[in-house]
Length: 30
Image (cartoon, rainbow, N blue to C red; front, side, top):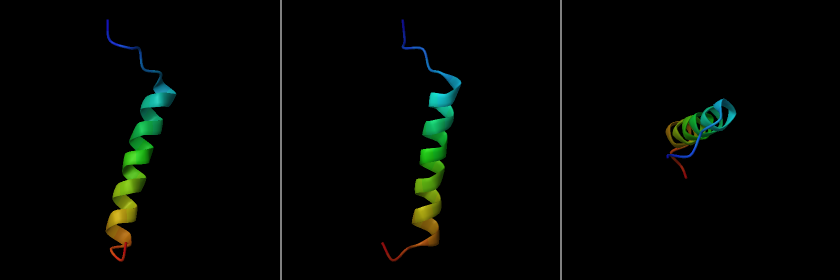
């Protein structure tokens, strides 16, 4: 059986991915 994901864990991953995308697009200097 696959590991059970909590709603908080999923939101955490989505927010992390979103922040990475925002950082990459808004600060291309890095």
